[in-house]
Image (cartoon, rainbow, N blue to C red; front, side):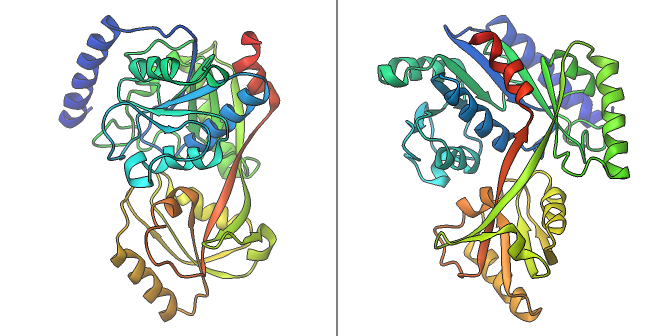
Length: 340
């Protein structure tokens, strides 16, 4: 570790010790979905999928989220199960996206997730009273006891440069995957290719080095369709051979570009912004100018990013790509089965 990593991790350990000494437990089960890197693992689609499956199995799940980059302060509902109650700037891009997708599933924002859980239990009606909390991005949230910790690892970029923040993408040393109860290697759509298969083999060696008890699952991020700003749907096959201007502000932008290529699209120009970037009118104007100068007919971004753009005057050729988290049913049995 260099001096910056040492300073960062020393601070984390002090915070961890204090939070653990004051850790609280909610009166219903808590499942956490998190990672040990700063984004890029596909956490939001995974959270959506788990919440939907829990609802399907008869639970009343409720998502507890920090609402990263959202402007709202204090504990509040982002959704009570009928769509977003706040705009994307107030809620944060990821919670807003979850609220758009999830029906009959409340989402509560609060930095203190224990207090957010109590808020949900006290304020939701009986037919939505949570019997299961899903803790969004909770692997390092020491203040709340979790019954199960699910850790996601990106198959294409699992641990960055293996350095801690601020020198790398690791929030904790890789050895901390020893705390995981369940591990999911994500974005394994093309795992049979030599490069990805080699990555997965190395990841499995690392997992076995530190964690012999957690079952390992493999997930895919399946592209579903394109949607324009008017809600019109374009099938995946439609994109084959077409030139796109792609842009995104996500944790692993390379994964988005690879997805476009995998379905036959041609991201002729691909621009990346910092994760959770707050787009400006100038950003959009520059993108439109670049498409016209390069004979590109279509612009595409992620669902997370399109949420932050809807307040602008957007061109009709701007599309978002819908993605679905796919994983074998054995995963849901492992996560939820003991609670049935």
